[in-house]
Length: 306
Image (cartoon, rainbow, N blue to C red):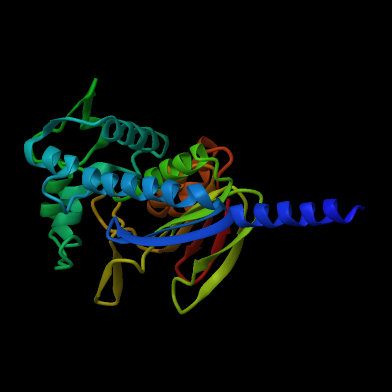
């Protein structure tokens, strides 16, 4: 090879290497950390990730029940709202998953969570009569979506906490894909989406100890875990997790954690909650979600996989 061609090839290789880079950024969103780690052209990484975080902050402003000006808070306060396309889309997705899980996932769970004291962490054990009364304010079928408007019966409120992060992850990925970024990891407080040709090692937290209980190898997939260790209280030797069965009004006991792996983060997010509520009966519902798999740890450490 002529010397001039040799040095030209080296120079071009050097330039190509300079174009590739990795950006790793974390912000506090949705009440937890939100991390984006991507590899691609250095010239576009910052702009792409800037757009992602702008969108994520926007979702937080739309969906948060703790922000009085969010669309969800306005809906909960007034019982009606002319919603943004994102609010309409996420409610319709939630209704779809509710239908496919016989109501084990239900965004109208808010009044029950409030009754049990999970929002303010002022835990209490309600009387059965209180639970039965509050259950009348729960039921996803009672939500009315008409064009771009949403209506709730008096006293009913919604909480998108079991689906919003998954919805956000999917849309963050779409933004990065449009920018031409082909490899990365998006982590929304433990709900994770990875994309590209590389395999990522993702650990499942030990629900009754330190560290991880097992490691997953994921490629272009999402994963979400719901556990009884995230927000709970114990009394008289019983643990009451913040994941309630909307059909009974009581916290679901006997399940430690549920991890769902699949293509769409929004389904993984909501389905992990639904399967936690369903427990061992959840296996029969997996046929409604082809391409998804679940890993369940029951009380005592029994492991199931569907």
